Amino acid sequence: MRKIEKLNEPVSLTQFKIDNPHLSYSDLANGNENIRIDIRNSCLNEQYFLCAYCCDRIDLNSSHNEHITPQKSISGNDFTLYYNQNIVASCQSTKNCGHHKANNIIDLTPLMLECENEIVYQLNGKMTHTKPRAQDAITKLNLRNKVLEHKRKVIIDAVLFDYVDDLELLSIEENYFLELIIVELTKSDNRGKLEAFSPVLINVLKQFITT
Image (cartoon, rainbow, N blue to C red):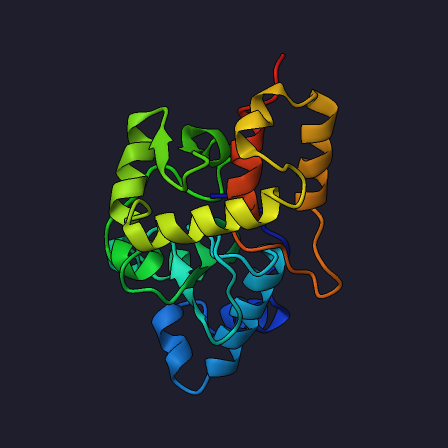
């Protein structure tokens, strides 16, 4: 995961809440689909077009509006429309991330800075954790599945080989060089998009920086 910095909610959503203080997110299906699209577009831009959970590349058609705290777990209507506290964009995979999480609650979320260090990625695409809540999130989101592991490994190999000829030599690279790679990985392209799984690569590289 990568910590998501939430920005202002779409104007169309703000106006909807002002005009309909007793309605919920489910009511956006009744002739207000454009607001759902506005929400997704805003989330995509905030997330640099990466899934909030697995960090694979997504776009408007390959993502959905995801409630971190599931709608069925919320008492009262308003929190289902809390853009800054509860809505992100997730990929459409049914094997992991938002659709797989379904109505489960996770205590480690992409709105928390800790998500960047409590989940630990490895060069081979596998992952581990430092705290029980991270393990719980990994399980409920099914982030350890073989398809994602393979995708992560392919990207790690492809991108890091642009910088390092032999990945086994990462441990002897100078800190400044590793930090330079990290800076490059945090830069979005001219469309505001980050490389797929770039937060995973950054997580891996930080483990090789010596203090």
